[in-house]
Length: 243
Picture (cartoon, rainbow, N blue to C red):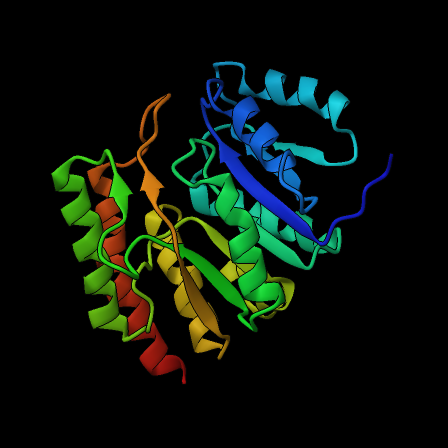
């Protein structure tokens, strides 16, 4: 059965063998026929083998790009965006493999773009207070203040700028010069939203509850945070002189 879909969910993976099958099945169980593209960074734990096996079960819905090594979140998404644009999807999603983003929220992000007029919808932890579960307090504070800081420096009207749970209408990604996106880590998320906002696209935040990963290990570290801290100043600085 060949199933057409207007939507693809991009999931970058590195050592996600505990999660990848469960997350793919959860997405495919949704009524809206989402497709999934896994961008796999040569995980030593066999993540790719699990995806390959599942591709036989879901040949028209599940795709994978295998890369030679751990090349960073930003480049994984850029690779996925270009592939998805080539294939003609209208709505292109970013999502983590580790269930910190609830697949049940995908249709809400889709509705925000497909029916409510948004160009970018963000699964936001901070629209109404702080919606995170099982996070150490230090991380909650770091993430929350990072978002406040980004808003303060850039003036972008978005509460959760570092969110990695996002739906883009294809027009947004087509308008962006994806090869000019320079950040690789969490600052990549900020840069994408800031660029979309600067291009005049409508951004809508959809409140979600973010649950800390149950399986596998977190990829957050201080160098990622440093990139975000100084990167935001550069983004704002460059934007002032690009006008």
